[in-house]
Length: 358
Ligand code: SAH
Ligand code: SF4
Image (cartoon, rainbow, N blue to C red; front, side, top):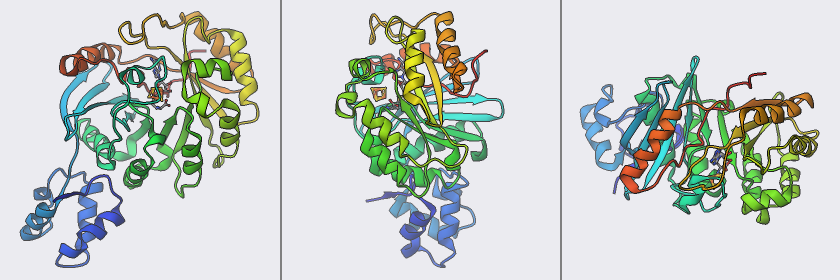
């Protein structure tokens, strides 16, 4: 049995390889190769004795998901279709912007939460990704994009609900934090309250984003079944108790669906709901999908702008997610369709860095 060294912290890697090394400082060398130098094979670890390299290769792997396909967008974004050991596929997205690279990672291979506006939800439950399958997405994308870790932002906005995969998420975060500051990592949740409390207790916390998507309990429950289990009032209580470092905010994602949650009055209700919480609202015009999300449409640009403006006037920070990599998204449908008869699972994966136009 070989054990993956990927998806682990430096301390953990050192502990695992310690019984096999000839001298104590070797453990740190190995951790450095895995984490900082992002090695693909033990053969690359040229400052280790040859014999040690082959011994390590007998007991350990540097496992990562396998790239099945990469779709490149004209704006520089790349969407990856990845295959895991059991044949399951997931998607990840890399989005360059200015000097930064935002990586959108998946935490599960589907999603049991079943939000009505989400293609991953429409695909149904998948399985939890292991820590190496999660961290491996980061590893292979920074390699493919030839980007240094200090220019990377990570968002858990791909497939799945990260806070329903806590054990693997924790290990993956510890591994990612070796090269990417927690300030540059965002975990997005549909509102899993026990998971939010767990996150609150971590010694090193990533940033938190909450997919709100409706300003009141009734409508939220209509599109996000999980709101029945974790009602909005309790969710807001948990968020008010969430420890925030100075200057940090909680991001609230709000997918705008035409005729459902897109009125200026809805923005007013939203502002009232967030009252007093250091928050940033990320307005996301729905990504349509005629096959998986029939009948759901995005509002027109004017409606989106009026909604965002109402929130901004209340003094909150608002961004409107610029739709980019559209050709990637379109191609992604074909991509996954070609391989699996499924489409667009990370169509929503967009950077949330762009300020709205006004
Ligand atoms: N499960 C987590 C993280 C993955 S979903 C969560 O729900 O937060 C990441 C984001 O994509 C969420 O904010 C979700 O609301 C948004 N999203 C899902 N489907 C979308 C669609 N069709 N169009 C636009 N955004 C979508
Ligand atoms: Fe799952 Fe998030 Fe999609 Fe809801 S929006 S179905 S929680 S991935």
